[in-house]
Amino acid sequence: MADIVSLERRSEIMSGIRAKGTKPEMAVRRLVHSIGYRYRLHRSDLPGTPDMVFPSRRKVIFVHGCFWHQHLGCKKSGIPKSNQDYWTPKLARNAERDREHRFQLQEMGWDVLVVWECSIRSREYVATAIRRFLDP
Image (cartoon, rainbow, N blue to C red; front, side, top):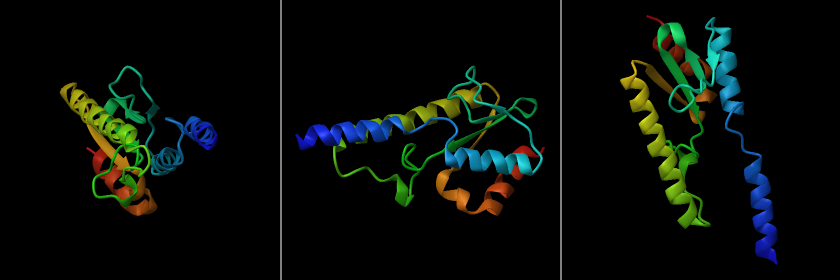
């Protein structure tokens, strides 16, 4: 019975995880807007549905969670100890899909910037990286 309860609880937790409008994404969106850039959100006609799209500059920004997208070298990117047969291939697929989307976008002539969740703590670092990326 305990397994059923924990599976139901796990399902409840997982259903609360959003793909759009996450706290890290919202923080980066506010930052980008505050430094004067305007963007389009989640263009579904582009590979990976980038979080922010700058059409006139042909540039996109993805805001990735370190766990879900497996940020190499980050302490938040570990594989859970329970149910590793599920998590290991799932998270590997996420990372591979990210690489494919970046490659497809670059083939289409788009520049790609990935902002990692762990880097958002340093607002000035992220702002500098975004300015360097977006300014011609």
